[in-house]
Length: 289
Image (tube, rainbow, N blue to C red):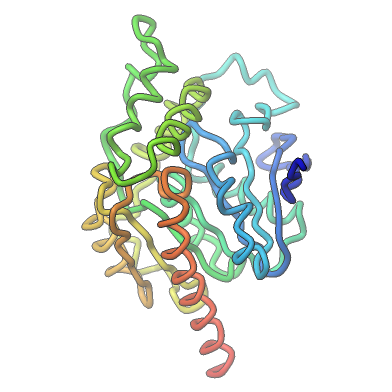
């Protein structure tokens, strides 16, 4: 007998900064919204393991969207986007996520993103502490320079293979081989957006000297980083968390830069711990208020 996944997909119109996007998202589960951002140059399929995780979806409405220009989310509908170079900015990225949550009428959502998604999670905690019940930056840090490179789209290179192969050694060798190859495959499909995403990641994102302004009581921060990640090292994330009031950092063992897709079985244990920490902080906040 065939098994049909409980995960469903939908489109929603998101109007932000004068641009209209038709945004595709996958969802499953009931309870508090858990909004998930994929890594740069990829799409929401990275979160399939989480979307089908029965223990987590029993308590959380997991929503994994495709950022515009990724996966099934098109570029803007109301502008000649092909006439301009795509360079994602911190302002537009943060504004888009808030607009998406508003369009879906989400109450008290938790935001989780990985890599450049982890960095935007920190930006959201700083900019919109009252819009989110907490953030989980995965493989994130205050500053990630050096990866906005021309050769991601060099005409002499096979961009799809370059982008895909660039992620291979960011994964832990302990992760299942099939899942590592799936993560590689996801990246072979997103080369056109990869460099533009990295404009945010390595150029426009810089929270050095600003981390103390994040209100970790209003918007709790729990950071997760794998010990096989050399792009954003555990030391980078630990340093970042140490400067955010009330933030916590958990180092994930035997996993790399793409934990949700390279080894969900390992990642889920750390994620459950992070969610428990956020719930505990929420209960303490209610008790003391």
